[in-house]
Length: 445
Image (cartoon, rainbow, N blue to C red; front, side):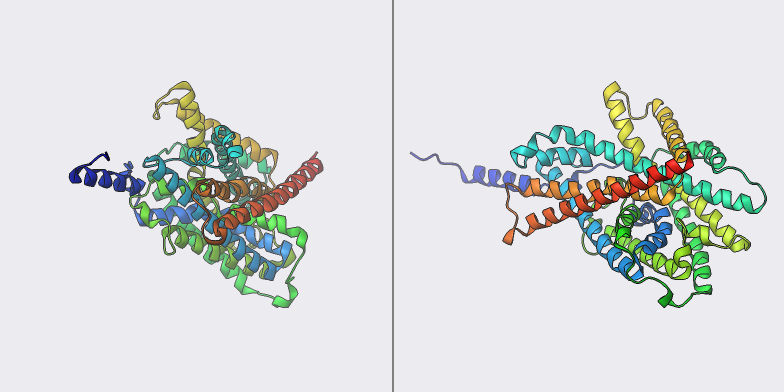
């Protein structure tokens, strides 16, 4: 005899099932000091506009201006799309596990557990791998920031007759960087980010003044360039536009995270603005200076004019104010693993000791190699090809493995495409950057 369930009980069961299916992680988040949409946009601009933008003209010189414009727009679009895939994947994992929030490493590990059997075995090591690459990437950014600030300060002081070795300025930055890095809360950095954004606007206005003052005929510049320059362009664009750890951290601190994604979401607005600025600076910077372009376009500005020296100082201060934002992910990863191992509270004073150690580490690495563009290319090619392309493709593949890949397996081809672009671009770019860094180091010996 079939079991009869009362209508009221059946309605309650169906309501429960519906509630489970409709679980929205965003509705269950509890965020301390949440960030408004404007604060998110400001922080996003600061995370994606930095020394990578100033290095873009040199990357265009390697591939030609037309190739540079087309390639940068394509690479940038792929990167932004991959970030959407990644953030949607993290959201889907949270929804399935019925938790309001998860970080990148945990989301990747949980996604691998529902994928093919041959990928489930590596889920345990996924957390450590992603944590390492995240920490390495943002540590590399901080190293590049130290080199950039020191180079600009040296150029200014050399003009006034105070000629010191570049390493002196790098070491001198230790204490100021430690002080700004002791700011722990992400929202507390919004004021620094807003000030840095405003300084970048002023700095770029001065740069464009010099660019447009004496533009030569465009026909004097290479249109197509050399294919050997693509690894450098790929790594530089990756470094310039994508700051995965900060982008995820910003989303986690949002007051209204629903506004982050989507066609008209804050992520597209912020990174779209940045991408347009990159191509503009790269195109006109290469047009103006051609083969004379240096690792950072600020180094091409004439030192005998006050406004150019002011621009160098403005950019140096703006990057200095951005150091804590980029270093946020490194300390977050290191302290999370360290505190879990020793069972320490989040607010334990030892975190300040670790922050000081990270700053000193960036200073030492900057002293060892001060080739700015090669550092950018290496960090971008190695770290971001995995974090921003390969891992998002694998995560999406695993989450859809038992659910289907849509009509004509469109999502499968999407994931394969992201992985292939990441493997080829990242592999070639990393090999090229390491080779150049080794050659540069041997020349100094």
